[in-house]
Length: 492
Image (cartoon, rainbow, N blue to C red; front, side, top):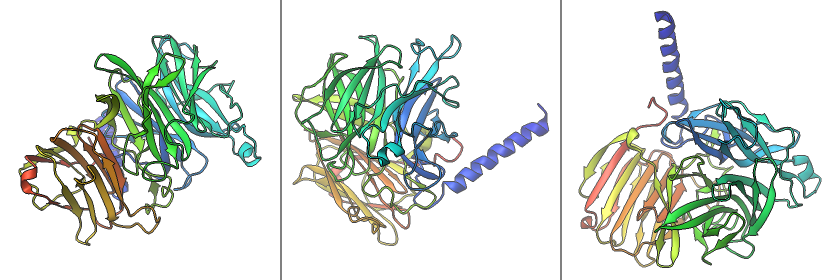
C-alpha cells in the first residue's frame, strides 16, 4: 500500500471522528451512553458476544424521531463503552414490522444454517402485521427467525417464517432464546399478554410449548413485555432469574422492569417468592435483557426512557439512549433473592481525583462518583448549573430510601408526569453503604450497596449540571472519588 493511500485512509478516519464528535455534541446528547446517530430508538434487541465483539441490535425507525415501522438497528463494541453504529440489520417485510427479540450463536449448527467454517448467528424476533392489527384480528404477532454468517452484517430470513404462530393473542412477542445445557435444547421465553410462555426446540425452527407463568403473580397494571430467563449459582444453589418488563403499571408510573426468582427444570418455572420486585427503582430503565454467549458473567442493558413521555422529550435529531451496560447478579438476603447491578468497568474513559469531603466543586459532565459511608444517615447531593436548575439525589432516613428529585432539573413541560421525586427502598441491612453515581448530560444512574438498589433517571437541563455540592455532615463520607469521563464519541 502506498504512502499516499495510507495518508488518505488516516485522513478519512480523522474526518469521520471529527464528524462524530460534532454530531454527538448536540444539546442533551449523552457522552458515555449509546444513542443512535439520528432518528428513533427503543428496546435493545439481540444482545450477543462473539469473536471479542459485543453486538447490540435495537428497535429503530430511521425515518422519524417518533415510533414507526420497526427495523433492527445494529451497533458493535469491544469494551461495552465505545460503540460503532452499523447499517440496518433487519427490515420490515410482508409479514410485518420487526419487533423485539434475541440473537444466539448456533455453535452446534442445530439449525443447519451454518457451515464448518462459519458459525451461524440466529435472530429470533416478533413480526407485527399492521394490516392484521388494523383489521381487528388477534393473529398479527408471530415469531420469525433469520441467520447471519458474517457476524450480523448481512441477514437471510428463513423461508418458512413464522416459526411460532400466535395462539390468538394480540400481545404475543419479544422472544428471548437461550441454550439449556442440562436438557440439551433451546428454550424460548415469550411475552403473552399478562403472562409469559415457555417453548423448547432442538433446531431453532420447530418449537413446542412447554408451560406458562405469571397469571395472578407480580404486577399486572399493563402488558408484559421483553422477558429473559437467566441461571445463577448463589451459595452453591442454582437459582433462575425471570425478568419481565411491564407497560403501563410500573412502580414509578408508565414502564418498568420487574423480576421473579425460582426454579426451572426445562419445562416449567416455579417462583420461590410472592413478592413483586423491581430491577431499577427509577423511571427510565425499560425493556432490558442480558447479552448471550458471555459465559458466567451476565451483562444487562436497558432502554433509558419511559413510554409515558419517550416520544415527547425535547431532543431534536434523535430520541432515546441506552443505560450503561451492567454486570448482573443475584444475592440472598434472609429468605429472599435480590438482583444486583453494577456498571461495567469505565476505566478506559477517564482519570480519577480523590476528595475527602463533599464541599462544592465544579466538574465537567460526564463524570462518575464513588463514595463510601461508614454509617449511613440522611444526605443530599445537588448537581446544578448557573441557571439555577438542579438535580437532587440522596438518602431519606425516615423513609429508609434513596431518592432522585428532578422537579427543577430543566425542561419538563412536555409531560405532566416528568417533574417528580422518585424513591427507592434501601434493601441492604448494614450501616455501611457504598454508592456509585454516573452523571451524563441528560441522565443519572445511581447504584447503592453493591447494586442492590438502582435508580435511572433522565432530565433535560438547558446547561450542563457542572456544579456539585452536598447537604450533609461532611464527616458522613470517609472517601469520595470522582472520575472525569471522556466522551465515548472520540477515538478510544
